[in-house]
Image (tube, rainbow, N blue to C red):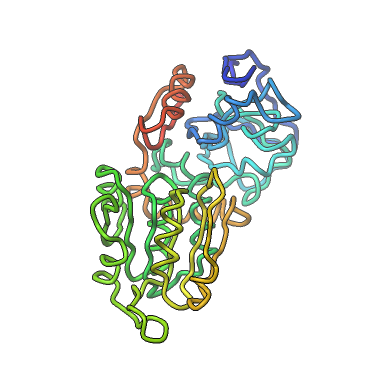
Length: 338
């Protein structure tokens, strides 16, 4: 079978690989869809992931159909639809430095256990939506890190895939009001489609002033101007202006959760924010959320589908990778296997 691999810096090529076979404790999954992540572009640019430099299989956002089940495996049968935990496989992280990648017709899950390596999902969820499970787990971990729950007032900066996923996650956790901030009109339209209560175009609106209109106002410190009553600020954009805006607006003991990757250091004036006692929390990966978020996808897959901007067939996976690597060309690309 052919697998899309990084073979050199700035080069991804089709490579012939052996089809996997399942031992008694394993299952083979026929990949039906796989999302393209920004890290895939990074892997290609740098020429792989050490120690597999120069021969890195790609694809770590998979969903598929079980095609072979080892005799000792429980909780799954041939034909079941599953989402996969790429970090749990014995031969390394699928598509992120491991021996296998999901931009390939099949992968084998070694020592396969339901709830650890895979989770069975309903057959009616479209494959391209099921393939959002891994990136949405990243968003869901950020939601969990924020501490938001029933009645919280939240603002999400960045209406890309993780920001939109977080908006859905916040609503599923019972947030009373979720605002999404971006500068791209069609992204703001998507935010409303996935269930955001309001949106702000930060290129033309004062974010803090609009948040006061939407969330109400609380007194500032010792007679200073009032602050938005927003409880949680969520950075899924990764630009310094977001941090500046959030910290300047944050009320006493508000939470700023950062899930975005900032490519350059960000300067923070701790003297200015000292009086607010703002809580800054970082969020990375999905320690427990890989299959927690599946419940949200099952319940609201019709909302998650709006996150997807482009769907390409497997034989054009190299084009999908190039498309996803082009700044401003797309939002979320998913490869489907026909």
